[in-house]
Structure formats: C-alpha cells, structure tokens
Amino acid sequence: MFSKDNDRYSRQIRFGPIGAGGQQRFDQARVLVIGVGALGSASSEMLARAGVGFLRLVDRDFVDWSNLQRQSLYCERDVKEGLPKAIAAANRLREINSNITIDPVVADVLPTNIGELAQDMDLIVDGTDHFDIRFLINDISIVLGVPWVFGGCLGAEGQVMTIVPGETPCLRCWMPDGPPMQTDTCDSVGVIGPIVQLVASLQVAEVMKVLVDAREAICGGLQAFSLWDSRFRQISGANLRDGKNCLACDQKSFEWLYGEKFTSATKLCGRNSVQISPGIARQLDLGRLADTLKAAHSVTHNAYLLRVTVDTLRVTAFADGRAIIEGTEDVAQARTLYTRLFG
Ligand SMILES: [Zn+2]
Image (tube, rainbow, N blue to C red; front, side, top):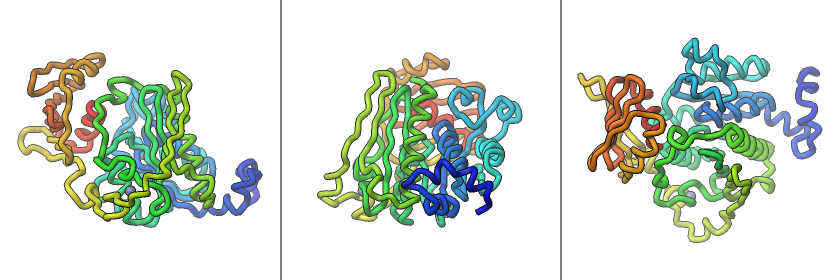
C-alpha cells in the first residue's frame, strides 16, 4: 500500500476491530450493490471512502429531480444530462476514490442475470427497496454462499438485517410466505433523508463486520427504527432456524431464481405497452391505493381496476397485482414505475 493510502485510511485502521489486516481485506473485497437509489447511494459512498477495492453498481433507472432530496451521490447536472444512476454514481465515486475499481452496470436485475452479476462477489448490499428482488438476492446468496445485507426504508421507518448463508436466518426464514402485502411506497407515503442515511450506515457497518470476519459482532436479528417517534428495536432471529424447514436454506427450493415467483414483464407487441405480472398473486385494495396515489397523481378506479397517469404513461392495475403500462415499450422503465406505484 502507498503511504497516501495509509494516510487516507489511517483513522479506520486505528479502529481496533479493523486494523491494518482489516484494511487489506477491504482492499481485496468485491462488493455488489444492487440498486443505487437512496440506500445504494449512501452505502456505496461509504464503501468507496472505506477503500473497498471493487464495487459493482447495478441499477436500471435514470437520475430524476425527485431523487435529489435523498439520493446523496447525485446532483442537478446528472438530472440535466439524463444520466443512468449507475453511471452518475460511478462518476462521483471515482472522484471520491480513484484507487478502487468501480464497475457500473445499467441493467434490470433478473433471474437470468443475477448469477453472473453476483459470481466472484464477497457480499451483496441490498439497495433495491423492492421485495421481489430481495427474494431473488436471497436465493442467489444461498446458491453461491455469498452473504447479503438487507436494508429498507419508507417514511421515517427503516430495517436492516444481515444474512450469512448457513449461519443466520435467511429472508425466507423470516418470511416463509414470500413478500408481505405492501401498498405503501415512497411515492405514496414519502421518505425522509435521515432514515436513508441511518439504514445505509447500519448496512455498511454490517458489511465491514462480514468483510473482516468479525462473526461475533454481526447482528443476527432484525434491527428496526422509527425515527419520527424515536423508537429503536432489535428482533432476535435466534429460534427461526430451530425447526429447520425453510424452503430456501433447507429445502433448496429457489422459487425466485429458478421458479415462477419473480415478477415478469412482457412487451405487448404493437400496443406500445408493457404488462407486469407478479409471480405471486397479490390482492391490491384498489380503493385504498387510489386514495394514497391521489396525493401525487391523477387517479380513477372502479371495482375491477385502477387507472393512474404519470407523465406520458397510463397505468392500468388490476386487483391481482397485474398492470399494463401504456406509452412505453421499455421494460425497465415499466418495472420502475410499477415498483414506484405499487411496491
Ligand atoms: Zn431460510
């Protein structure tokens, strides 16, 4: 290591549990950050500053004005230039630390590409805020034996969880039935900057523990925060593995990676539309959804469907969670909008 590296990382090296050996591990580490929106911005910045040697950033989206309030890597120029988040993030991180390798990938994370994205990685950071992709990350994490750190935030609430395959409960151990029914999104109930920074900070602390192999320091449970009423909780996962019948870690049934559970998106030929079909039947409460979406969008609904217009796109959603997005043939754009509106 050059002496300027010793200077750069000196305060971190002086922190006993990391030390010079830990710094060397950071330097050799390869970390995959899935989603560089709010959480991914904050966590990848901390990882780059800490000297993690290889960061792969995957995101399908572009920088938008509504991102700047909390997505800390981006600036107005990125919006004006219409840059994809992965590229804008890589530009910024290279300015922060030119000694590490940044590998930006502009792509949708899917069952067909997650294996390639995650192979040879030491760890995966969840920056998606999207349960469908988290279950996919959980599957590949077990298949490849790569730990991952879950992070979620909405409003002023957040959660963090570290999953080390074979050692701590996996996401499916916590949620055997798959993703929770969730209709609130950042689009409907908003999100504030401080919860993003808090969740990302806890995620990165967990990443550091895993990378330096501080197994005893890793939080084996779920950490949950509600910043607006100052509540902090830790839920133990200690007995979740007692029965040992998890579909993912015990039965090796990877339904998001190899099965039908991942949400599919199909172009509807000649209609300038994309259809999104959740792999798990959902039950959207159309009336309630219409009420929350009305705050920001033009919405109509009846007993069977809900219509919402966002810029030039018209979205028709059905109670089973299926949606048709008219005005685009861009599958990634359609997925992004679907996630924004319906979680
Ligand atoms: Zn499990």
